Each structure stands twice: as structure tokens, then as C-alpha cells.
Length: 210
Image 1 (cartoon, rainbow, N blue to C red):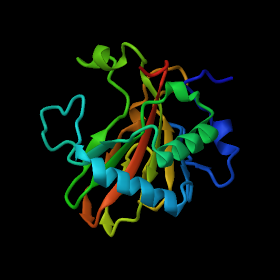
Image 2: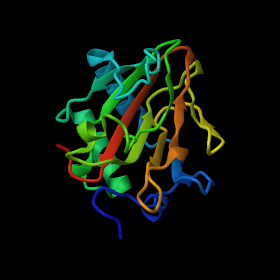
Image 3: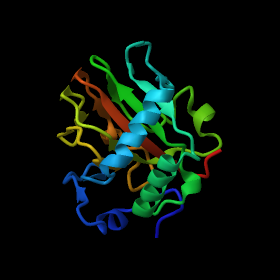
């Protein structure tokens, strides 16, 4: 039985078409055509309207570590509500444990260098970001469009690189079965070479958000 901030392989794999990447080092899944094209278009328009430079908790002194733009999506927008419902139905995670949906836009040359979504337990910012809601448990990420060149997401430890496809979902457990953070979830939002890349990300926490 899962806790409110957790999903499970069994729950996810009950969805037709969902695939687990065969690697014992992490729980990593993909589902093509999760979000319909019309909803992808609505979400892209929202990102374009409200985008701002992306930030990061710890860039390791590299100001080019994350060069994308970000949009904090309004929770009451109909398109955002629709996607939130889809994610909750798929994951089974209590929506109270979710961070607000975030959109990202990558222009040519922009990337997010290899990183993990969890906060390093021994990091200087751990208390700041995890004191209320706790550590991140699961990540759900949706590509909203095809990219002319580049823009793949690479999980080096899994030996797997995912190409952007409209509506395709990736999701992964940021922790191991014993609750420790999983460094095998290190992933690289690779540089866009041509065109634009739009992504939606949803993170879940151990405890209710906020």
C-alpha cells in the first residue's frame, strides 16, 4: 500500500500503453499520447504568455547550468485543471502532495545540464526547500511538442535517451525502495539545436504542499 505522496509500479502499469524502462537501478516509465494535441496547444500558449528565466536551487557556480524559461501555471486555468486531473488519475497520488504545475520553454542553445529533481539531503538549501513538504517523491513530465533537432532527455544510468514527442509522458521515482534519494535519476535536458521545446513538469512531495 502506498502513502499519499507515492505512486507505485503496479498502479502505473495498469494503464494501457505505459512502459517501464527495463533497468533495476530506477523506476522510470513512459507513456506516449498521454495528453491530446489540443490540450498541448493550450498549455504551450500559457507558457508563452507567462514565461520567465528559469532558476535553480544550486547551480554549482555555473550560470549556464539551466538556461530555459519557466512558467508557473495558474491552478484555476481550465487547461491546467484538466492536466492535473489526468495526472492524479494516472498516479493515484493525493493532489495535496503536488507542487503547482510548471511549464518550461527551451529555445535553440538552451538546456538543463545533468541534474536530479530531489534536493540533496546534505545540501545547504535542503532545509529551505524541504522543511514543510519534505523531499520530492515522484516526477511526471510531459513533452508538449516535437522539436526539429535536439532537446532529448538523457538518463545516463539507465542508458536511455527520450526524444520529445507531443503528449508523451515520462515519470520516475526520485527515491529508492528504502526511501533514500536515487542518484540514478540524474538526467540531462539536452540542448535544443533547432526549433522550440515545451515541457510540463509536476513534482510530488512526501507531505502536503505549502
